Amino acid sequence: MEHRRLGLSGPSVSAIGLGCWNFAGPYGPTTEQESHETLAAARDLGVNLIDTANVYGMGISETVIGNYLRHNPGHFRIATKAGIRRDPATGARYFDNSADHLRSELEASLKRLGVDHVDLFYVHRREADRPIEEVTGTLQRFIEEGKIGGFGFSEIAPSSLKLAHAVAPVTAVQSEYSLWTRQPELGMVEACSDLGVALVAFCPLGRGIFASKAPNPASFGAADFRSHNPRFVEPNLARNIEAVAPFKAYAGDLGTTPVALAIAWLLSRGSHVIPIPGTRSAIHLEECVKGAELRLGATELAEIGRILPRGFAHGDRYSREQSNGVEGYC
Image (cartoon, rainbow, N blue to C red; front, top):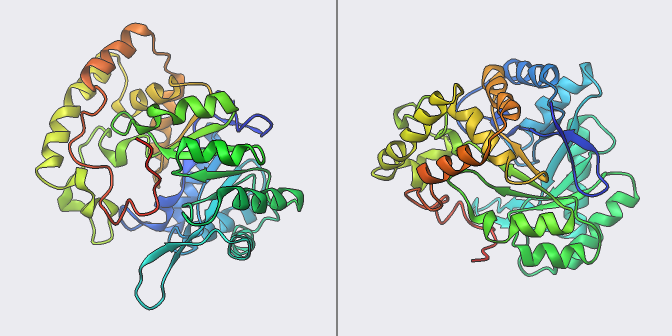
């Protein structure tokens, strides 16, 4: 497995990480045993970066990981997140980047994970009215206290990254980035490269659109994130499946799978880009890892660009509710 640097002074991590939201069931029911089998497969495949958050199942994902680590310590570099809250009366989501909240949530995450520090701690969503410079100071104190190895932000704008990085070095920015979500190419890919910040790409497989078998809404459970996602409701879904079909055929022509090809394309975007496909299946993870074995030349990249040009997707990547807290910058 190829390794990449997690920020300028951060640890060396596998070029592909494992997103662990799926351990909490956002795309369907799962079991702790299934998640543990996926973690064991990650270890065997050389994947050493795992990504979770306090709100993934309201602590379920972290607890599942912690239960695995208690019997299998070492190997993994752990990233987790905090900053999202819900009003207990209304259920409405809001954001809290205060020092007290981030500290209490970090300490709760460490307890669930069964560790005394994590390698990377993100602000999951930025609190718009709180200066990011203040938040950066809070995160830097966590480093000084030995609770985290580095810090980052999820779904922020390049301008916010530059403000934060001027206070203390940011380790990573996490953004949705894939062949059908190309917004990071409008400034974030370049800003991270210029500053020596890792760009951790979540949902690199478009929430399953690049899987060999097309997503079927009939199989979506009530809690499935895609049930209310604009790209997965009709008529958008049928149009997206049709648009992606030639890409899947091209993957076959190259002797690989669309999953591996989509991952390989992301890895070609820069040595600072680290995809973290989310899965609860050891078999699916193995298919993702094969993307790190592919080397795409100019001819292949040009053909992928012709088949799936920027902006080909039908529908917004988030509904209005799902996009709450995401910083726009174009």
